[in-house]
Amino acid sequence: MNSPYPPDYIKLPPTIACADVEDGVIVTMARVLGLCWTSRYRETSPLPPDRLAELVGRSRATLYRHLNRAQELGWLKVERRGRRLVLR
Image 1 (cartoon, rainbow, N blue to C red):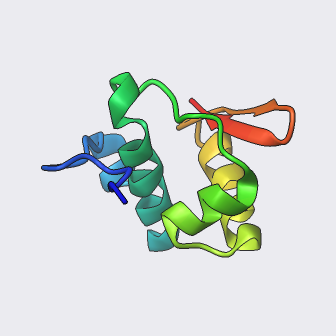
Image 2: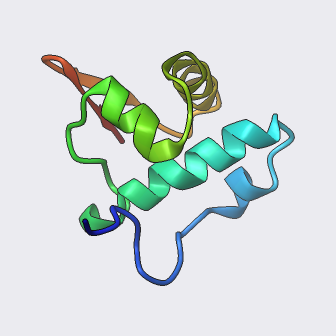
């Protein structure tokens, strides 16, 4: 199975990398950005929440907590498409 992440690096803005937040939120955000690389870092593919949690290596509860924090910080927006999520 091919990796959903880019082959060389993940583009992580300094405002995220150096943010004064829980390290886990930064790691989750880096992994989310890695999932966005095929769309030039604009958005993820529509994914079921359980698959998204699996891809970023978090429990579903932790994923939602981290996504809520990232939204509060203005780092991303979560869009629901039926039973799938798109992160922008």
